[in-house]
Image (tube, rainbow, N blue to C red; front, side, top):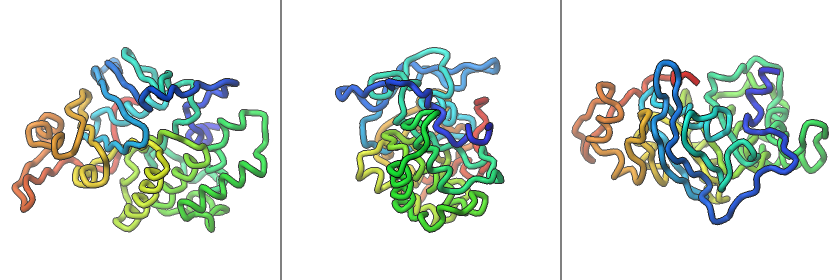
Length: 284
């Protein structure tokens, strides 16, 4: 059961009447968000908004609070203070949020097929007592076809490559009919080809109006592939266009001694702690 909980959308509460969306509200509103642990604040007074269809890259050093932020938005973790609203309502009553965790948090040896995991995205629509219908399986098939994994539907998940695993999670979000997808370090361990395959799927999501937040370390990719960039180190250092946010002053504020600034042909080159593949350690 613990394994299945890792794959299910952790936000689902099987409400008979999940929160509706308020069309005049942003898809995500965060105001004064603070998360505190005994060791100190993991997030301190964050305020920002995200509009429908936006692609936001969340960057910052290990331990900056990226994973904690995603868990609060998904409704997995309750904040110490502050407000989080998805389409005008608190996260806990939504079935439109898909949370894709870091791959290191999943037990890939569990005997589940790719199709099984993608069908878990339908759980919020089905409830606990209904079996999947032909319509549900058709949505799963369509989602797998979209991410080019249909021929691997019956394959055991431990037999997938890293890139295929990430695409499987996106297929689960598609089957869920998610409108807000949170992806925590999806590029970690992927080669350039697998990264390009992942970004081609993200482009498709963008064309469908899906809002995407992606936590990553690569500042160059953040600036080139996303509409806006959030620079985070427990507090909000900056949010906006990459050329505005990723300036030397704010980068030093976020990364401190973990950052080296080198002159480059196209301006200043920032080398952060993107060499680390072990994820975040923000106590959540």
